[in-house]
Length: 146
Figure 1 (cartoon, rainbow, N blue to C red):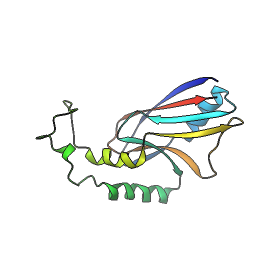
Figure 2 (figure 1 turned 90 degrees about the horizontal axis):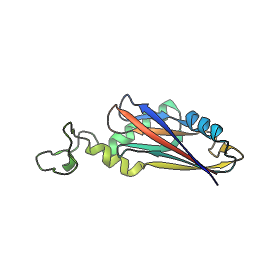
Figure 3 (figure 1 turned 90 degrees about the vertical axis):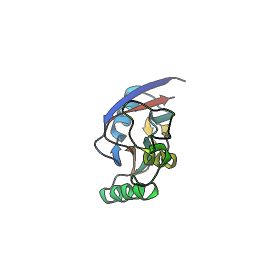
């Protein structure tokens, strides 16, 4: 059994934002020459998630609205109160408690079986990087094992 790791760096443009990375993952699988195994897609961030869902424009809008409803950007978060927060502060800190709370429901990774050189995703399934915070550079790792 072998493992190959690839990286995608993605500049996001808004939040929330669903960025379809399925083609990149499929290309890394092709390059790896793995026939049977597992693809792990992982976000290296606590405010950007990896999810599988359908890439349909109205549904993407619905999901963006849903994200805002479950943890509104305008709600009050202790994480955003810099007068009391003392942990993990940086010089350019900004309020993003909503994005961390949203991430709890989405998660950092997806695992997809590989059979006969193909990702085992359904007809409408796509792999998304989900930006929850603000536009910035994001890093996604793809590990293919087989």
